Figure (spheres, rainbow, N blue to C red):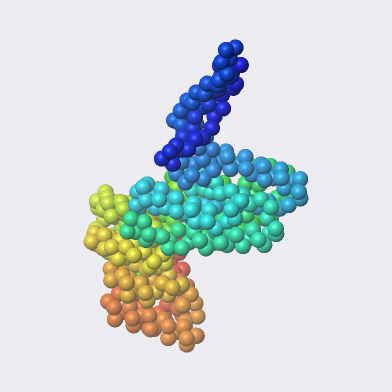
Length: 474
């Protein structure tokens, strides 16, 4: 009788391996000894095709990590095992910060390499029996079964954060990657995988809004706040489409005659249910969404249009840009298009840098060169805070305006240390041929004092509060 076929791997004389299906059939004859006929069918190609199908069904093609469906199956298995043993299961929800801007500035090939390296760093940071999966474009999950204590999970989260944020070079470009990470636990309970992942997701959003590139543990007390942020993220698309974003303008006055020389454009959101929102309530949500670039484009266009309608001596307008937006390849073309469309002269547009990350970019000087070649001005906002400040003046000769942070003048007329600092910065600015604008002037005493110290210009509530375009010119 024939025996069923057996599929086995065989090693060939040259050391290579093949798959074959073995068929055995005895040849029965009353006059001959028993003979077995063996037939081998090479099924290597079929096995490879099956393996590819399994890989595609269960694993992400870019990173080779388990995909969302396979990750959720592994999470279910981990939770079931934890329910039986009473052990602790932890889940990390990791979101790669501002991946879209990497794609926009450097192309999807670099973005893919960036993601693969982030995935590798996450995988290398956790234990060998932990699962690292890719949920979507910039989202990863880490499943940690049988964690000893919450402290151990937090330690692993810290390792992930620290590993990912190491400097990265791709195609000659320098990057400072980071992930925001949320932690959720299931202690001996057969919780729903979706519920636990949602808790970790909520904690991740808290990390992203409070301190991007950090970790947070899920806390039901902050759930309503996280839900609010999630809803705002959903509302951003409608805000653009329905023109709910608006610009308010705060005057910048020249000292000593206190004549308005221009305005700073400040973003506001006229939310249909929450009223007028200031940037503190929504800007982080915009910056961490795919809408950061469209919102930036709108702000630039609208600010140039409004400025072109002002009196000739008040057309200068300041627009805030993140350093990641400065790195966009298409930014010079965008700025040039906004100027041509509105008729605004290039020297009436000031681009304010609001983050310190430009200092860590090896291509930072070239980025500013592209913009200065258009004829626009570059300003450093909140000068003197963090590690920004004098390093900017050393590295970036294209900067021609510095805006002194409001913290330095809060009590400048009665604090000798603050006075010496402000006086010194004004002297440095003038020695370097820079214009110095003092921010946060709110009282008569402050206005009089910074004028005496020799500041070139100032802005603050004393000279005018931010207002819509029509009110700013009444």
